[in-house]
Length: 141
Image (cartoon, one colour):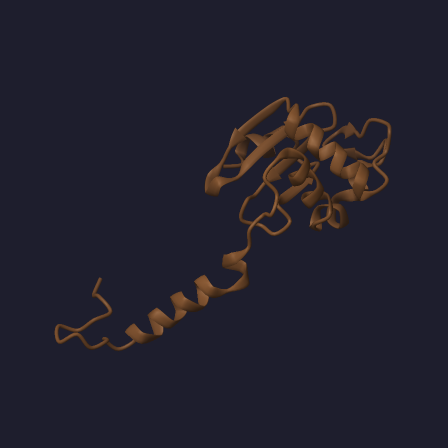
């Protein structure tokens, strides 16, 4: 692969465009996103107040079946209760592992719930009940 500079120090064709693209990429809000929390309670609150509740909150009603497993009572009825659940899973998971890009995954068998903490996301990650259960957790890298 050729470099972006010619022998005389000038940019090769496309070299300036490549530098501009890198600057735009690293200066974008997405590249600068960062989780503001630094502990289980903070992660739980941020995740519950992020996309996870709107996208997955309905999965946490007593009796809702995901992957053949009914969610146990009591239902999770609001973001505060969701934050408490997420925090408890992070603090006392059945399984836990660090995964790529500084993320961590947590699994709770009783409800088939995964929590993913992502330090590079504004909402610090997500929590949901995957359709393929613990297989999803095991395959997440």
